[in-house]
Image 1: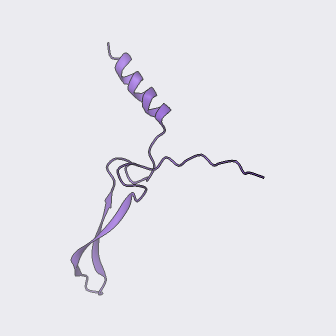
Image 2: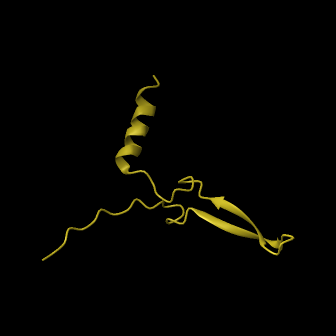
Length: 68
């Protein structure tokens, strides 16, 4: 018997779901750990998901039609 297909995830198109990454700076701290910085995706602000199309359209329509 077939199973219901789960809804597709709203993965961010900018980062493909990998929203935060650690980038090494090349040096080491006094304790020997690598020096890193964390970079977040600008499109999804570090969540890895994108809002659904209905929410985007509602936001765009509200912004356009309320500012007369």
